[in-house]
Image 1 (tube, rainbow, N blue to C red):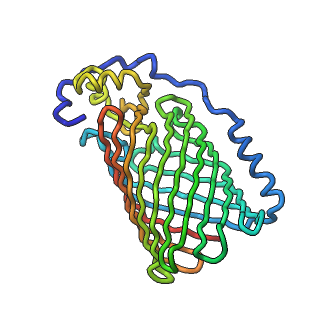
Image 2: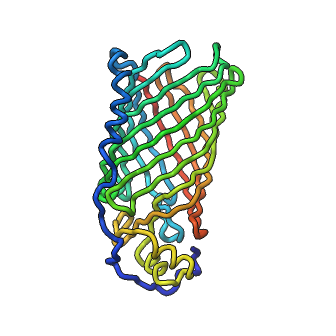
Image 3: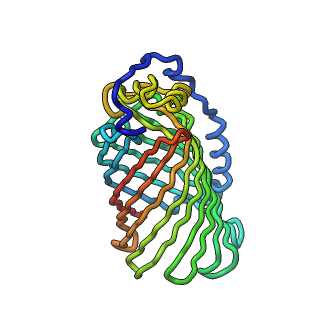
Length: 318
């Protein structure tokens, strides 16, 4: 989808048959499964052993994940996350952790994107051998309830991951992760899921300064947005027959997330992403983070989306 394609606006019907809310597709059994996994750990772990609070302020380019430059919306983002956990040593090499996490996201210029999440998380960590250079394998699952301001985005997110990490020497660490996420939303326009394969390298420059870089690929279904004139052109054929056929086959919803008449729709595809981070320690229990992220996504009919984000964060361990 390019600028030159957006000439004549062909408005397809605003009340398409697939432009509707559907009943929530997630089952409470998903949450019950995670809580059941929590109980053996929590029941023997004793008092809360870890409380982490992270606050971030940032700026996102093309937050709307739109293609046409005039549609691409930027905004400041503010997020607060609080997580608490209980740990138990199951054996000499295996440690289990169970916790609860709550988060709130505020989007400065487009408040319909504001949301909160809450849910449990369970992980198990196995260390292969003794000493700081021994590799570590960690498995994690979680489920969160999303309380979004946009009604169609409300729902349950389940996720899991597997990470293998190793310290190469006192200054350098590497890790590789495969993970997945599935958001079962109230409206099919917000139903998204993906799997990722990514890695990271961390450099402990000094006792107080740390630098990290990473990247990988995401495959799955992600949400995109378009203004009504652009979306009408896509449905009507002004952007080409391939785009017309595909966009007429997927669910969509008028959400007004980025302005009156704006449409949200899910597309399948992949994204290549990478990030850089610098993290100076402010004290024994506080760390400042400076981070840059970029993602280049392509959907199944070749439409490209580029996003960039800069964030300043503060992590407190209480």
